[in-house]
Amino acid sequence: MDVDKLFSESPEFFTDRIHLRHFILKDFSDYYELASDPDVTAYTMWNTHWKNRIY
Image (cartoon, rainbow, N blue to C red):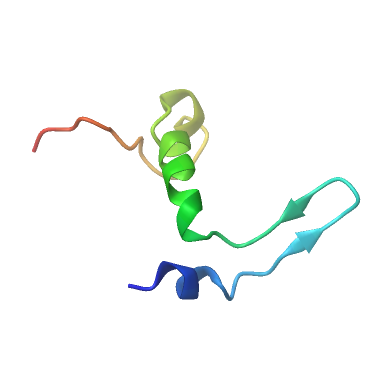
């Protein structure tokens, strides 16, 4: 799966104070950290990503 292509169609949003852009591959480690924080995911629609989960 080409992640950069997958998110390249996402709209960008600009104001004087913020620039929201589409995800790029180098963003995913930071996003995973965010999604692994139970204090953050308590307010999201996804479950917490566990780093050391044993299946």
